[in-house]
Length: 365
Ligand code: GLY
Image 1 (cartoon, rainbow, N blue to C red):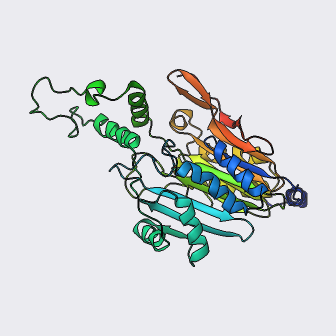
Image 2: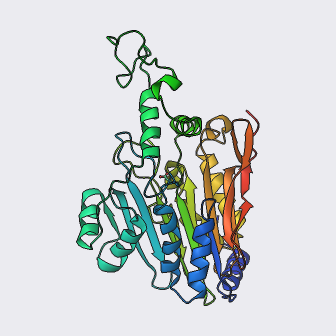
Image 3: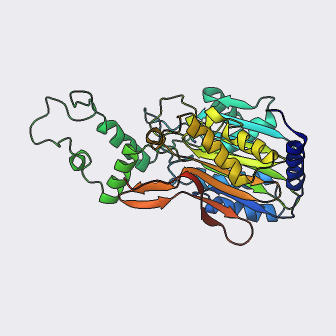
């Protein structure tokens, strides 16, 4: 389709309005980003650079052992080793940095920023990224918590071959009376709540992650995405979070976008870049996100049965302060309870959760 003058004018007008800095401070994040948005807003209001502010925000999650989708306490790969991915984009200087499959460092977002600032590269992975972090004084630490180790062990022990066997449960030669393969017997001494958590994680490997986008009153915008990736992944698996244009994209002339959820789907549509380009051509942040979700749906021929097996969420913040969050599905049913997909925002006052726009309504199973 050729671009008519009318289309071009519409896109240009929308871009011009997006270019008008509205004098607002805004932070947008995934549903686990209440503390991150609050921190980022405090720092931006105090004059801190937008990228430093959003990184400080997500550092709270990276260092929190209770957030099992990010940094320390993140759920590990199939060998029980935590591998982290992160990237940053700094709008004012149009620079980016990224790390993937980084082990033993709690705050991969800080290393991504170091890659951006202190190297002539954009992306570093694995052993090289770890050595780089250590060269800058970061200490190696064990990122596996007792809780995430238990969830991983539960997953290992729940696997079965065609004969119902698993080498990680008691052997064929075990004396009668030893703990059975039943869940309770596998983990004696573990409280019900922790057991339910570990079982839920073993059965529904999460693709958590935190994305945070920050805009200051000068119209400067930056973003960060950081994750421990898909739980129980094959070692070396890299998701969308450290991929510039997928897990995060910022264009200071337009705005920024980020993602959480199943990274494999996002990489195939370059989601964050797609959303920023959609906004550049005049779409609202909400429509821009929904369009990226439609592209994901299209990759499955809009087959709802296959699409129902995963979820993915997008967040967009336009340069004029307009923002949105949108998900493939309206929410999720867990233990018969419907939980809507939500995102965090702060455009003044307290950080709050809002329901995401969505492409498809999740039906009760
Ligand atoms: N979106 C996080 C991941 O898939 O690794």
